[in-house]
Length: 90
Image 1: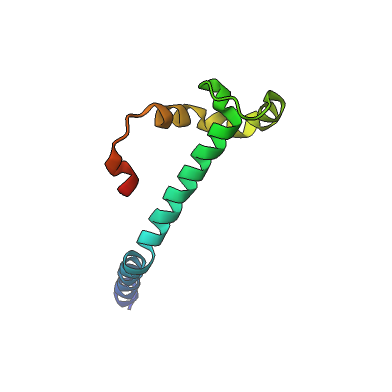
Image 2: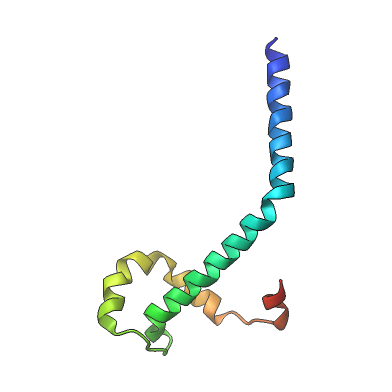
């Protein structure tokens, strides 16, 4: 009896993953890409003076600094990365 329940749970899991792949995977990827670009823009606006683009006064940037510190290194790498025209398409 336990093996039947286990196999039904496996079938349910596989069907759930297939449904996720068919219905939600592309939406989740698009949302993550949009979130990343908005975070990139937010960090550029607030801490642009690190790369020479002063937009906000330093007072507001210093108030936000503790929340952004973990993401600054990745942001700098993304900003300095060489881009191709096809990056915007895909």
